[in-house]
Length: 96
Image 1 (cartoon, rainbow, N blue to C red):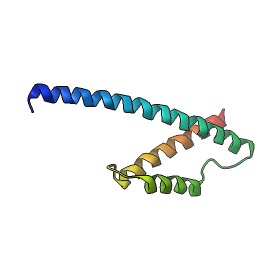
Image 2 (image 1 turned 135 degrees about the vertical axis):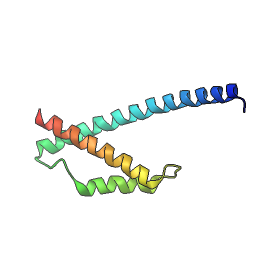
Image 3 (image 1 turned 180 degrees about the horizontal axis):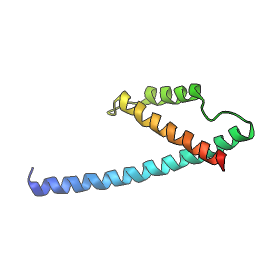
């Protein structure tokens, strides 16, 4: 592959990644809106933000449905971080 062809191919791939990133962001914001509802329900009923059993269920769900090429360890780390951010958001909303 020539250098020009390689540059063209990279530019094409990067445009696709930009599109995927926007779709991921849209889904993350959709998930966040749902988490906000969950946080309000928990607050109204004096339920704890941290629910380790539920977090285990979320991780199990995504790991069981992962068909790669992303390795399970990476999926777990990504979702652990996502869950942590959502938990932080719930706590912040409850403090307001």
